[in-house]
Length: 404
Ligand SMILES: Cc1ncc(COP(=O)(O)O)c(C=O)c1O
Image (cartoon, rainbow, N blue to C red; front, side, top):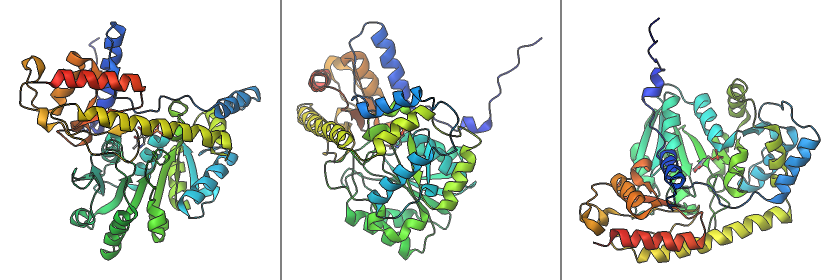
């Protein structure tokens, strides 16, 4: 018998591999070989899940909550999430307007599958979180990438939105605070975007990914608070991963008009059905208002702010690098174009931030992600979800490796 050729679906050919996952893999490999690598590539809080949530999961196990749950989550969790989304957004959500998903990533995936048709355009401001573009392509949509500038704080302007809107625009994706830049839109900026949609009589849906909302160092402006008239065509994505240091539990949610949530749940019912039952009980504890959870979140955000200030100060000492101050999330996004096409320590010349990333890993043993991966060549993304000691030592290595 001949060996069958491996044939994969055509839709796979258009997928770009995840650069953050690739970097994570290479770092793990070097660490296994005994190399002391400091990673700034991690997209998750380095804090423990609050005890209240962990104990709720243990309790759920003992109570044998280990069976299927309804698609989109247990009633109590959807109720708690609806209450949370309502108070966040100033819009009343009922539990039927919520689906709890296997991470926010699944919420986005399902929404694109449910709402995007072949050829529909989806506006995505760059630098962007990589999965938006890939998920839109998987749904047959056309990502319309809008390149924001450092001068505008990596935020899409009303003029840019107007220039990219078309009769085929089906959706606009907003992500504030942003991964990878940490940029946070102001009320006035969001109002400007809403005005453009109104003036153009656009029927585009708005997907607002607010997964980093808890980790924000300036007053947080929400899309629906600024533009409540868009509630009937806005989908809010959020989850427990970043706010409660619960990435591994895989709990996200999507809130929106019932007709859209029903469509999302119908695809969910044929794929994952629901996140793990035990994780749902842990999330129920996290989403039920309590002083314990508030204190855990406050402590984490305070530590992140200190680390942001520490890494910004340390970056000042890295020659050839400039960096605007991020207002949220746990990333800095320095401009490294001053380091390209000139000899670094030891004489190496890097022609792109991709090459610089490899140079920093091999020479300085620090793991960072290149801007190319987020649609922004000439930049690096550094996550400061790591200890103060590692931040200081990592930035010392960065400076030493690039001194010409
Ligand atoms: C902007 C953004 N949205 C969504 C997600 C997905 O989060 P999760 O699936 O862990 O809830 C991430 C994770 O890194 C993210 O950075």
